[in-house]
Image 1 (cartoon, rainbow, N blue to C red):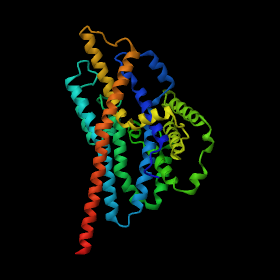
Image 2 (cartoon, one colour):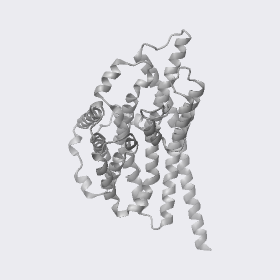
Image 3 (tube, helix red, strand yellow):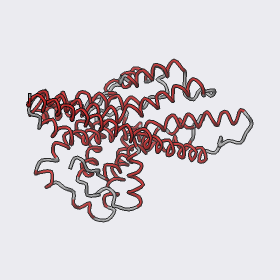
Image 4 (cartoon, rainbow, N blue to C red):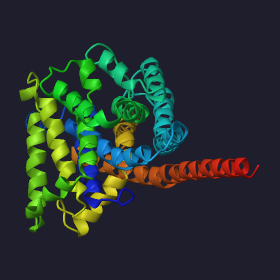
Amino acid sequence: MSGKRIMDIEVLRAFAVLGVVFHHLQGLFSDPVPLLAVLRDWMGLWWGVDLFFAISGFVIARSLIPVLRRCSNRQEYWEQTRNFWLRRAFRLLPSAWLWLALMLLLCVFFNRSGAFGTVQANVQATLAGVFQYANFRFADAIFHYEYGSSFVYWSLALEEQFYLLFPLLILLCRKHLVWVLLALVAVQLFMARSSLLMSVRTDALALGVLLAMWSVQPSYQRWQPTFLRRSWTGISVLVIIGLLLSYLGTDRFTTAPYRIGAIAILSAVLVWIASYNRDYLMPPGRLQRVMAWVGSRSYGIYLIHVPVYFLVREVIFRLQGAGLPSPAGHPIVTLLCACVLIVLFSELNYRFVETPMRKRGTTLVQRLRTSRGTVASTEVTS
């Protein structure tokens, strides 16, 4: 089960990344766009990050917990943990570091408009992204000083910290892991979130892990939402929950201590529906295939969309300065240009960075397993 691709999970990844891309859309324009301001009054789509957290918690725990719990000794446990860390590193870091480097280069050499911010801020942001403390820098910078163009790396840093610590949590908590995770969710549920607490929020991650642990229990199948088998019912549920999440994400709920916890729970509900792998959220068809494509490229889209926005702004600025025709004053044309570049760059990144490096990580893990088996057999025969 753990090796299968769940189409509804891919749909949710697409749903999440499209929300984040829209949330940052004002960064594409040098001047405020009134329509975007009106839409943001009613739709706060930053919750896509929390949906990503819930998906990550579920997907990682679904494969990692059984593997680690089958280990018969500490040495085997640490070998499996090392293999997990290696696979995650090869999956995430090459793309992340590539786009950090490109953003820094654009800031230095292609930034006449200042769209990418200052060099000093971007150097510091790049270090934070490379060394995985971007979430702490983001919490410190918000409302105080310029972060830099790689601000989306705060959530990647939090996920990397989760990947690093989760195997240790499984080892330390053992049979009490469920209760520890439930306590982690309960403590955060009605907590007023400061900037620091927002940057280390783990309730959606914990709920995703709990869902993965529940999915191997008999009661999980008894709670299967079979009523969603009816045509388009699942899409209706997806849209309704998405609208509710978007409304919770508006400034109307800024001071509500429960809104982040509510967003985490609703995100986990969507992942729960998707987890049955029955296409409950979106039936097979053209729309599902498009969303699955977006979902499979969602990591690249997440990393790429902000630098593309700033790149388009810089190009428009230079065209205007040279007296040449540009999309300036035509938001739809500007948006289409950005969308084309995001699709192009994310596809190139997927084919030539993500996929080859993921395969290289898998090959390295297999090589380590083979060498370990060879050493073990040599020790036995000698």
